[in-house]
Length: 474
Ligand code: NAD
Image (tube, rainbow, N blue to C red):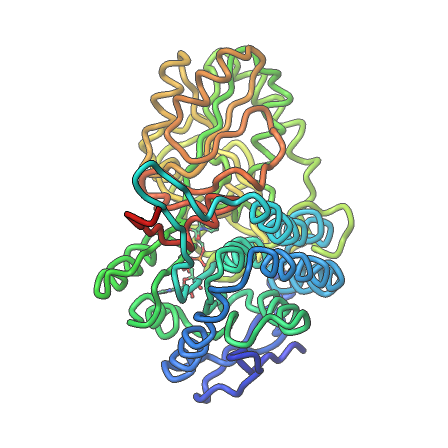
């Protein structure tokens, strides 16, 4: 049982001032794996005060000191690898191998990347008639979702540390334990007290409390569009800078010279990875109409190769959805797809055979989807694919951009010029051609309703800085 009933405030594990707690479940077994305390406004005030008090000295640390912190954190994070992998497997239901290869690895990459960026970051820009200095923004409030318990938290924390800002983190209630390990890591490396504070709690109490807090200068929120809107509204009251990393409905455009086998596997990978609970997942697969037969044959042949089941099983690539309410929401979307007339090509409602316990959903593929159907417009956040057939590349590009979102886009095919043309045509923050490897130095974030601002690499650090122009300093 993991009972983390304390908050981490001012360099110490402290009791919650309230009595409320919540249970955390293993979504693969539906069993309780531990509890956390639900913090109060008083707990949050203490954490914000600690971050405020730590700011004057932490903001004056040298670049070298902060690089040293980031490097020591990365080392300690690596030392805690087994705990981190085990925790994410248990609280999220992520297959153990993926918890290591994806979740653990992303956290490590953000700390090491931030250290690398910091080595060359330009904090001072001498212009002809002014000097522009970039200064740490102050106290940052970090609010994170449950689907990538180390990636979402570490990208924010690493950037804030690199910039010299202090912070208060509120992790997601569904997967809070990985963040508690991060607090232990910062404690172990001796991060000055008050630089990092963690208060567990509900979105209603601590999330709203952060976005409304008069002593927080910047809020970095990752989560749903609805809560992002509320965060902006709250932030507006004190003219707080707000960065939002929200949802997506990303397109994958298959060119007519693409190998149908490669395209089908790319599409399947997107709905299976993290059980489709990925903000950047390609969920609208736009395929040339004349490739329909070959593409569907490749889907049919390859889907069974992606095993759904117990996250502890080495062969499993897809675990359960994170919670019952998420399972039910995915079921509703699958039913909507059927009701609105899409062709149910694979999967459907209900649980896969033999997986009655746990929040396992059937990997579901809809074909002949119209881009106006609900399943093509709304983020489902589960293992559900919509295949849309297009009669020309122009039509494919139009469909790709006919969405409220703009987080990511994907294109597979052979002709380099066409790949580049299509990549540039998609209005989204991150486009991947032919499954190119991740780049942690490149910006991550969305156009349109997918958000405001960027994370990762130097763009991520910029978010935690304020530019100051000084005139006449020469
Ligand atoms: P969510 O919006 O329900 O919750 C996110 C966080 O906000 C949680 O910590 C939650 O407790 C908190 N919260 C809830 N109500 C709040 C309120 N009124 N004020 C402030 N905070 C509040 O999202 P979720 O279900 O945890 O995560 C899934 C969503 O996150 C999806 O839409 C997904 O696309 C998005 N997401 C985006 C990115 C990205 O980088 N763009 C990455 C991962 C997830």
